[in-house]
Amino acid sequence: ASPLAPPSLVRCIGRALGVSDCAPAAHLGEGWQSWSSLQENCFCNNSFTEALECLAFEPDVRLAIDLYLGSGCTAARLAKGMAARRAQANTSTSAAEIFSFEQDPEGLKEAAARGRRYWRPRRLAVSTIHDLRRLQEDLVTPSKPALLPRMWLLVGSPYPLGHEILPYQWNGLDVVCLHRQPIDVLVVDPDGDVPMRAEWHVAEEVCRPRRVLLHNVNLPNHAAGWIYQSLLERASEWRLELRGSYVLSHEMWQHPERRLSQSRSWAVFARTRDVGISREK
Image (cartoon, rainbow, N blue to C red; front, side, top):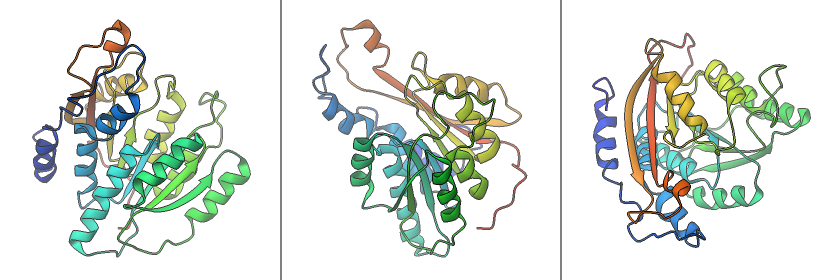
């Protein structure tokens, strides 16, 4: 942990870093038969998800983007931390919000079930120009304050699939951040086949996140890795606050390629310069 990280966050993260043995009983053979139990035991309960909840509990965290929803493990922990903070403070004077993108219907269904205790869902498509106009209309409509955060389940991708940053395509991530920047927390954990060149450009330049959480930074050919290196080399703009890791199994996997993904590393970066945008809390 960086000495400049908030003490309350460091204490909470210190407890979270002990959550490294996420699946002591999980064993994956060549057929990955135990994948579903591993997902629940490890991918939803590990030092990274604990760190997310700790960060969401910080009093200055009100807006978050979990760029890729997946099965909802990370978004649910964000919402849980936000809801716990607001319940402890007994305040609902301002609306807390989480935005996340997902195309898979089964993933959306699983995520909705996982987070139903911690958020108020709002589901919208973001694939067409008509969808984006509807999203924009909803974003400018005042939201009533509540103890539970509003969860925007955005059906589609953050940036149109198969398109590079130029020529620029109107996209859901841009629309969200046009109305909500700067974002307090941005979570980045894409699939391995998503290069994220266009998505990261929009996320950093338009969303202007105060903190970025990167997951799977150690995996080969994973976008989180090159983003990690990019932020690390720009010390005048970003500061590495926290790093951690966990293992999916203590038994060595036999397949050499799968063995590379047996350990998962993550990092938290904080912006070192004022983003130059004021936002009323």
